[in-house]
Length: 277
Image 1: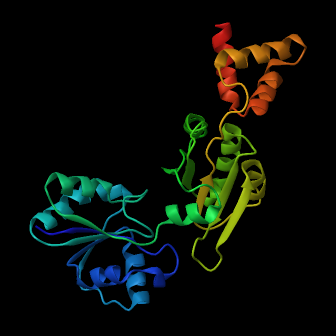
Image 2 (image 1 turned 120 degrees about the vertical axis):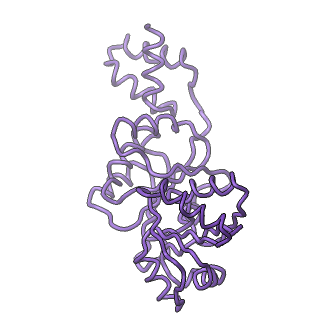
Image 3 (image 1 turned 180 degrees about the vertical axis):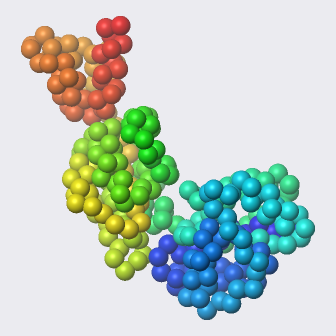
């Protein structure tokens, strides 16, 4: 059998490529590339002459192409998978082929290297002892809101990818779900010439992004703090009821109790509905 190689590509500077990646580009008989033009550009930057059979391997053809690449592996030919940047399989093609290779007993190995996830995490200034990667948030507003609400009490530092034209909307949704004061960092163009890391509360970052942001974006958000105030649904609902009895409109009361106790508004709202249902 051949060996499936997953090669981490530079996320910015070509000189970040490992020597193992250089050797694989020069010597692997089959290369599956997310973008064949970027592959050839990278090889040129590294001074590598490509002699492999190069096939395109991207999101839209990943399922069909995986069977073809598995056949190459079973025939005894090594296959290198390389994406535009970072590690294959991390919000990029690769996962299906790895699954198929493992199921057939094909050896799988990794050529370690650059990763936007860990690079952004360590430069963010947020806790790194425990973290989770959440990929791209859903594009549709309702789906995104539900996903973020589900993460509102996640205690680990969270890492997201996002497209620049959706950044402001996503940061605003995060401020709504996690609280405007939750610490975060927007990492732009990591390792490239115009690298920028903007740190601050989610509300401030959302306001900053209104003017438009360009480049590759990774967002790092601090985990939920330990609750210092009310947390039980019955207690939250009772606190809202006290405000309402004093003349505060329900919506405003929910907002105030959520902010004072460090919990998402949706949690307080659900508690009120449950108590009155």
